[in-house]
Image 1 (cartoon, rainbow, N blue to C red):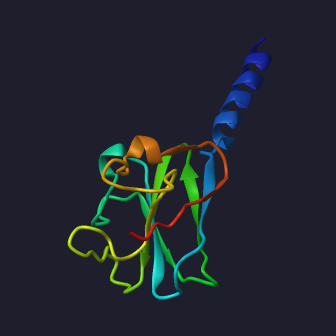
Image 2 (image 1 turned 45 degrees about the vertical axis):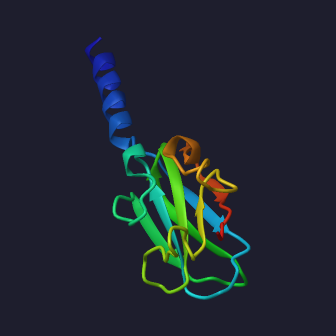
Length: 145
């Protein structure tokens, strides 16, 4: 009986030792950029209170990449399971900020799960978010206003 308890204890201990936190990757692609000027900034959010983030200060992770043939793509690695939203900026002047006219952006922007934006369709986390339960690929539409 003592031997069986000992073996069960070893099995339980080894299962806890080998248990690693699972992480996933998220690949985000943007097509149909109007030109190859500048870079594309991809910001990832995992908190409803941080999104949208016009000044890019409250994001979970941020990646920037060059444009190749009107397309930009990045992969966020080692992400825990959870709810995320993506905000994209075609940063044509490479200053890390949205260039605006009087009110509207002059550079392209995009949000996960949004095909258009406007005064009656403003980006909010609950609409832009998606569940990451495994490796995932998404495409985000870039919007020029």
